[in-house]
Length: 444
Ligand code: GDP
Image 1 (cartoon, rainbow, N blue to C red):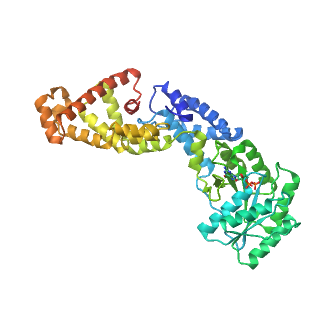
Image 2: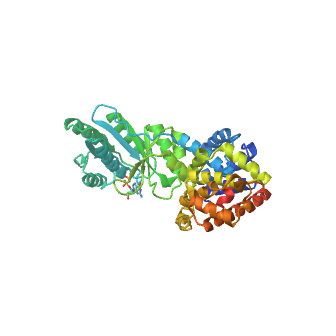
Image 3: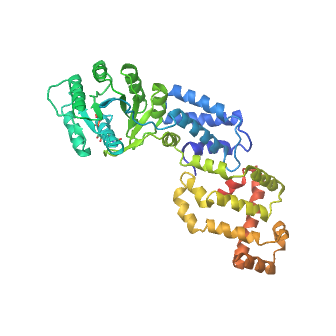
């Protein structure tokens, strides 16, 4: 039923029937899976180790909410720690300097540098109402300067006129000069890339940096290149110094682990994400989305959060006791219905589990709906205390009275009583299975 990490952790914990606080062994078993998931997602080994240690510290001793599995609980802790390590808030581009503010774009050839330059220019133009000048310093690739010019026309952002034969530092100086003279707010300098890191490239970028004193030096990396992207980032950070990272091709099937490694190893924030080839396919960096991607886990985290918000713990404890003793009655059922309704109904809850979204509509058709839950609550509240304690006494005339009192048909009352019987039967089974918890059985 589950996919990705959640499923694997679920399997581990399903074998355990222990409840309450997470023990060191539980967490240890789960973290072996987390470790594999992170490595599969292309997170660098030292980062994985550091991460696991951090999660372990947080998870051991945590109370598990009754309505969710320990596996889901661990996923939530792992997720939150991932978000924290990815850098919690999405940081914008720094424009705090006298105009024209120079922004240097660096990275390997093919990383999406030129495209990202145009995307950022468009974003700053439309969102911040900035007047932008773009200049290509790529004198190697014959069509590079032309490419930026065409992109400039597309996004309606000015580009520096091309003077054939001029060298990168000269072009950069000319761009800054034009920026000053013509009142531009921002000058974006798109440096040349190479297929791999080399000294010449680094020297060239460093010379442009010294000549222009950029406020931002944004490294563009291709998320699909995984670990290589991290090596590239380390090199640029050591030799040129970067202020932020733009990760491109997030729309591909990269698992996102490079983001975590890069953030940890360079200490620099990921500022923007490229999510497609179009000029507006640029997004602010949301650590939670990347975390979800790394874990491949659907929306289990919000499920856990919802459970934590809505499930009254004392109530759940009481219920578990009753289940153990076999004294579950219609009052308890009414309580259960209320809890389920609070969580957005069965449909709402199921929709949050990975892979279940699709069958949600079918559930709606099957009438597992809020309206039904309310109706059932109404039926129970039309019963007398004695009836709720001992439903066996509810015969034909009582049924008619209850139906009248709650505005339903007698067959609705019958259906509810039948459901109650089914619940009781199920609880006996649960008891035998080692009390995995009512909610989970209800959903299975
Ligand atoms: P540069 O050599 O680093 O300047 O790379 P380019 O900007 O020329 O981009 C290389 C290719 O990658 C082009 O075909 C772009 O359309 C494409 N590209 C850039 N960013 C993205 C992205 O976020 N997603 C996708 N799918 N393609 C991208």
